[in-house]
Amino acid sequence: MNWSECFRTIKNEYDFSEMDNILEEKYSTGTVFPKRDEIYRAFQLTPFEDVKAVILGQDPYHGENQAYGLAFSVRPGITIPPSLRNMYKELENDLGITRTDGDLSDWAREGVLLLNTVLTVDAHQANSHRGIGWEYFTDRIIEMLSEHRENIVFILWGNPAKKKIKLIDTSKHKVITGVHPSPLAANRGGFFGTSPFSMTNKYLESVGKTPIDWSENFEKKGD
Image (cartoon, rainbow, N blue to C red; front, side, top):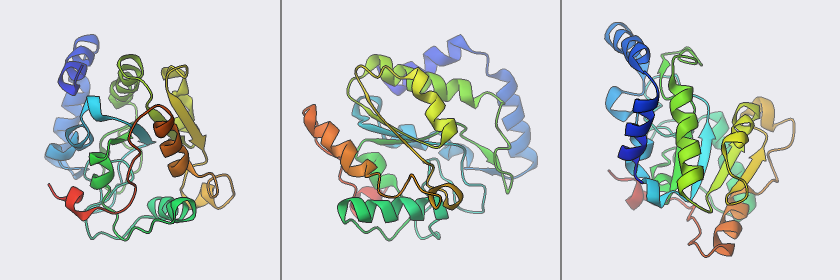
């Protein structure tokens, strides 16, 4: 199984023509993030057979020059958004690792699928593409990873992400749930101190897999 086979299966199951028409109209007449050729970047950087962990986000950043196809990640050199800043704080508390840039493509190349449940968004309008069809696509991606792979860590932060646990066979995969890292949620408690990064690596090691290098690797960030 690879992503091409996954995509082909999903396309055969579901008619995406209405979503395609909506996206064609939105990209033609307005500003949509990420760019068209970056929508599937998470899959390009993390092959199906290499996925060790999935970090599930909601929809892309809707600010100028931020989103480019990886959940929680921004383009190199762009100001680190608050949710990612909290993830970095927890990473430092958990493993003593400090990161300085918001580009997570090195994590993607380590086997971390940075998947949003919705893959596009109108500029400055959060959740504006919710319900147009992306959720079916990304739910099936999660199901196919669960079915065809073993011993993946699924990191589900926040209530919308936690609902996806029903798509995962927990008898052969590890699920880590927690509060969303956004300041509104994380500062109330339940995110900091949960050690998701070390927990992920301990599980991977326990099943004979190489742990994820969460440290900043600028060589792996290059395209």
